[in-house]
Length: 315
Image (cartoon, rainbow, N blue to C red):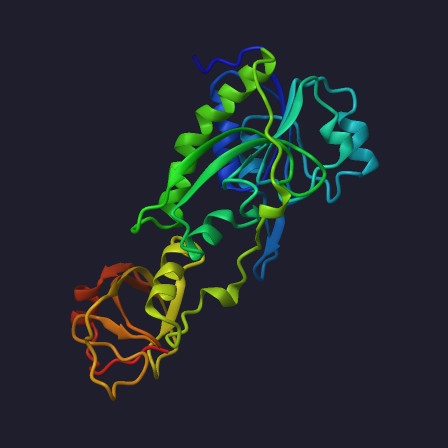
């Protein structure tokens, strides 16, 4: 049974990943006392205000929502100080949690993190694990401490990374494993039937935020590295390239490393064969699925059939 009737929760989170956990708690009858999320972003010429997925959902449910720029904001603290909650749940909030929040609930402040801690602390653990060619990852639930993702682990589930997994498929596996794991952890803490395992600090690695420039494919790299980039950046932000002489980006959505030699010795890096095999700095990469800017995703044959120019070179 996943029923959490009577459990009062303060939830800290911002993106879609966080919303999956928030809505699951809500669906399983947890009482969401309040939500804390990052302030709405502003974008575009019209300076459009974009509330986070968590905030948007919370507004629809008519829940209390706070979006302080800093957690030590006196007004924010004043607004929540009389709230009584059993747990603070943190999922991809985007800021460090301070002692005021850590010590706030009746039981614990716990965090859901998308890696096998202490490996890949930080903002982009799924992408970094794929870029690093890790063979497994996982989801951890830990007690929050002030240092980033450094608290003791209460529960974890391992997840195998298959050769054809991308960030999107790993994300889905994280959700599938993580939702029931969070509920199970809450129940065990309430029954005082849990233990905590301290992280080995010397084994920690940092999953820094993905920068825009990282998504551009450099065909001078080896085919294995480029293939990892394609997988790590699908669906977002998308590993991309351009056709020499063209100005539109092409997202590479799916690829595979070619084991045999497919190009002539004098072929330049970025040359594309009839089967859409691209010469890399080392080896070749076969593009299986791609998307021209502003167009729908296509399989390689569909793209080549619709593209008149021959002797393509990517750069």
